[in-house]
Length: 248
Image (cartoon, rainbow, N blue to C red; front, side):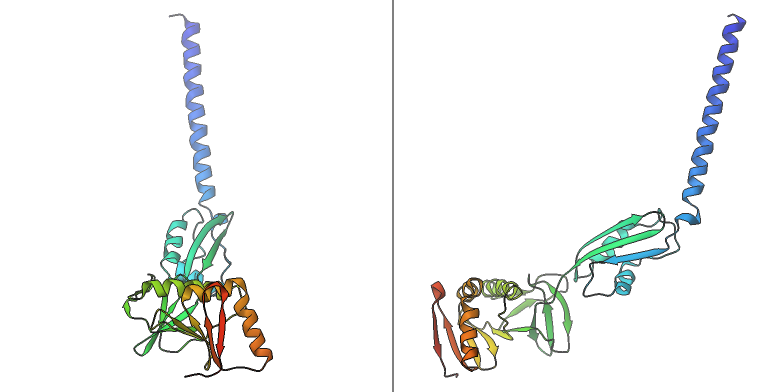
């Protein structure tokens, strides 16, 4: 082998070692830079929260400032939030160099189901959010036979069909001017109370149809303008109404 070839091989080997050293040095420098205090979490932002305060969301997520942003386990933060019944969805992202952004979608309280000496708070999908010893200012759903009432899971009752129809009424209530303070589901024909002595009576399907069409709202408005605050509104199919001023 000629001396020229040997010299070329030595130069290539030196160049390879030099490049390897440079890569290692750059990698180490990058590692130390990313691990530096420049990337410590300085701020945690919470977006779209309504039920919980920013501080409560951060506490439930166990998110902390002061730790390196790349060491922050965003999946762990998300999982802790989703373990709470009030949190429907959660998204956690890093905002370099030192911020964590938490965006949540929360469930809303729609109704309360009396049970023994407590109230079971549910959302419009029938999910149990919490239990309370104090009666909340929500629509009361009475007459249900409760089977299970575990927080974070759907309320299970024997009257499944009636509850399903009533939950749709609760959802529609949020989009209309009609509000029921109490709904009695003791029978297939429900009683939905506008006031203590002004009641809508019919199947959940018929009452729902009258709400969605806007006809029930118009009928109630006409009663209001006539100064009528007591009586029974019988709601039939095809938006049929009849009114009895006498209340049992």
